[in-house]
Length: 89
Image (cartoon, rainbow, N blue to C red):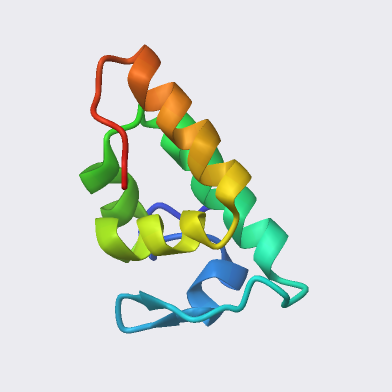
């Protein structure tokens, strides 16, 4: 569960170094962090600056996180296309 005032779940916050998301795709925490970011992307209708701000990170850091799981980036880009937004690269 996300904490609105502090940016992300307790687990999410343990993985932030400033605004950088510090997690390897092979770490046990990765799936939960990925799911949290994808859920919030859906909840906020793909508005990336709002998603990033809510998680205490940047749009570029979210994109890097999703690139670590190509299927996640594909889902994000399909959703963005449906919403008339440009895909991430």
